[in-house]
Length: 41
Image 1 (tube, rainbow, N blue to C red):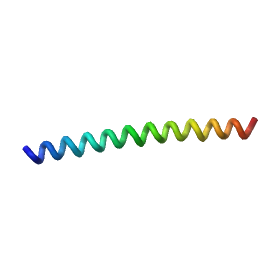
Image 2 (image 1 turned 180 degrees about the vertical axis):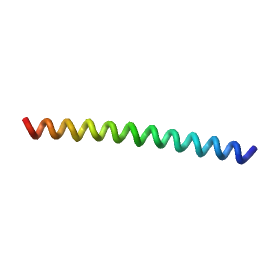
Image 3 (image 1 turned 60 degrees about the vertical axis):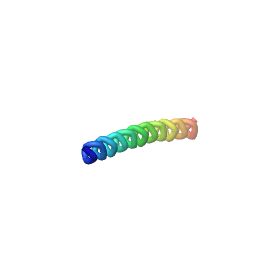
């Protein structure tokens, strides 16, 4: 049972980390595009 619990914990941690990274990258790309438009104007 401990192996199953450890596996679920690792899976949940990896999933949450992936969501945070994807959300951060998406936000960073939006900021980068916004800065580029500001410089062009």
